[in-house]
Length: 259
Image (tube, rainbow, N blue to C red; front, side, top):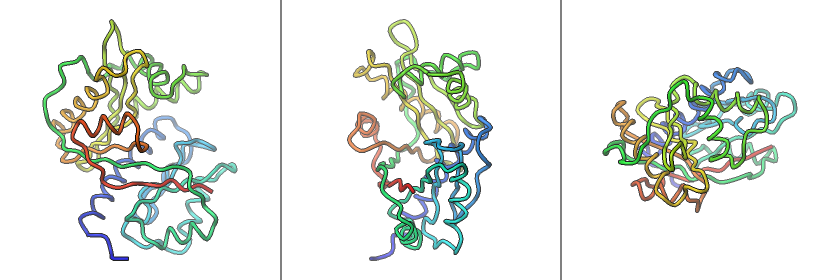
C-alpha cells in the first residue's frame, strides 16, 4: 500500500489532537479517571471505569508504535476491568492495527470525521453561548436533546454540567418556541475548532436549528483564529447531512476498536 500523503497525515494529527484534548479537558473538569497519557503522538483519555467516553485517540497517526505502547493504554483505560477502546484512522500506522488484531480487538462502530472552513455570518436564528447561570438548564437540555432522555441521576447531571464548564469548552444554546430547544459544544486547540454535542429537541427538528448551531460555531471559530473546524458523526445521520449543507467535507473515516 502506498504511504499516505504527508499533508493528509498532518491534517489527521491536528484533528485527532483537537478531539482528544476536548475529551481530556472534560475529564479534568469531572475529576474522574486518571490524567491522560501521551502515547505515540496521541492521548489515552480515561473518564473512569466503563465510561463510553474513555478512549485512546490519535495514537500512531503516521508513526510506528513502540513495544509496550498498547500495554500502557490497556493499563490506563482498563482499570477496574472496563473495556479498552482505541480509535484508528486510515493514517494510523500498521504497527498499531496489527498489534490490535493480534490481541483480539473487535470493531465497535464507525465514525466519519468532517472538516470545514471557519467564518461566515452568525445565523439569524437566536443562537448564543450559554451563561454560567444556565449551566444546569444546558445540562438538562443536552440530556434530552442529545442523549434522548432526561438525566437519570444527580451524578449524571453533574457529569453533563462539567462538559459545559470544562477548560476551553464553550456551551451553546439555540432558542425557539419560547425557550431553548437545542444545545452544542465547541472548543479550540492549535487552530482547530472541534464541534460536538449538537442536539435538538424532537419537536423542533427539521427547522434548521442544528444548522444554525453549526454556523454560529463556525463564526466563533473564525473569531478565535481557527483555520479549521472539525466534527465527527456516525455515517448517514441527520448530523452528517447538516454538516454537508454547511460546507463540510469528509476528511476520513474512523473506526473504534474495543477489547
